[in-house]
Image 1 (tube, one colour):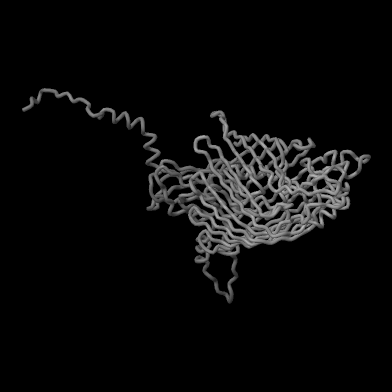
Image 2 (cartoon, rainbow, N blue to C red):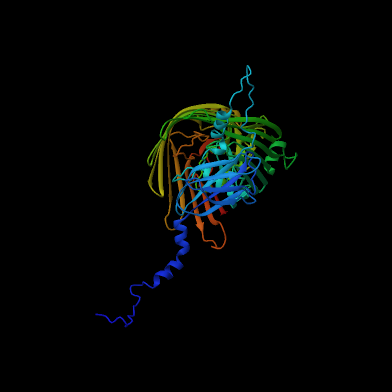
Length: 602
């Protein structure tokens, strides 16, 4: 039996004495994992933040739990809230009180609210009693309050962040938020397509920012010298976009471009004794795009480009475009498309978070395709009509389409002997050492099918087939030096195209490689299927894009990367034509070119 007067010493075994110390050390982490918070923005119907508004947190029983006020930006925050369901009451003079019920607070998470206040007289409706009867308006008043936009819950818990949540987060961040930038130093050749010349101007930048959450502004520019002839060139673009609802965001843009004509072009137009410099190529483009919902399953994307081109003469034209989409079911849809001129940038695919900024920079260098006919400047114009079916199931994507293309004043690239054709018919290319001829007008139609599959997380592949018409010379020998003979020999022939593309990202180095190839059983003077935007699309020949992240300081925001572009590596599709004096002309559907760029993304 133990002696009552004897003191027993107890030792701290098994780390029991460390428990209070651990509780003190990890109290902040435990606090963050146990409690939640409620944040929000209070503004009027015009979007102006409301300062000093009283916000009251109510328990499920209706008792007041805590009160806070909004700051200078109209933002409030209620921290250290136990998980559960709460109500929130917002009250301020000159506005109707707003009560939000069913606000769910979860541990370790922040619930976001967007509170819109309405004026006291916003829901009043004047009625005049008839026959001396006075109507009780209490039910109407309650109904107006129940249907008010300010009393509707705006947040839903989703696994994927919605556009609505991102908009609220941008509003909480301030007037200017979500700012991103892209800067590029580049050099090398051009990338010529059948629809436009994508020249490499040297130094480019793009900056995008959000204004008050729902408005986006992008400013981009491109300046430098042409890689082939050293002539100065510049382009600037500004776009404004406002998010009105889910998937509804009208956009307005203005783009100006200017390129000085090389000396060779001035001599070809004015003769050896004329103006040696020649006029410059100047373009101004006003763009508009929007989306309209015509039903639960129907969407209409539409817009236009108004372009004014000044080259010897001034040419003005409008290029409308539209796409009607009907959803047949989950991930299945039918599209009816119409496009004219250069395809709109929104229809072009982008890769990565900075894809939009890259797209802005790429569109700056897209000058129109110009040519001469009887000494008068012409601009290539194209129209496209297409009916397409698209189905996505898991990692598989199937696309089918039938289409029709019309080209007027088609610009044909060629390597011609000096002085072989009349200078009134040959325009030295403004971006390379080749020349441009007017090939006239022609029409083609065809169909295409494409299948794409994600093989692994970092590996995607696609293959496609199409039957279409191509513009091809019927004779490989010219009897005269008249360019009309060459133009008459160009006829539309039926051709089969096979396209394939593979893209991958190396796991350790982070190198992105995108390769594509196009094969045709017929030689084409102009690249076929101009508006193909399927997953298996490809320019003629073998094309490579390599993007390599570079080491960069950890203390500075952003990242640095090098990019290489190789177009038509194997010189596929070059068409030789023999002249009457033993020389050769080469028709070039796609010019082999190399480009490199150093980009900084922040």
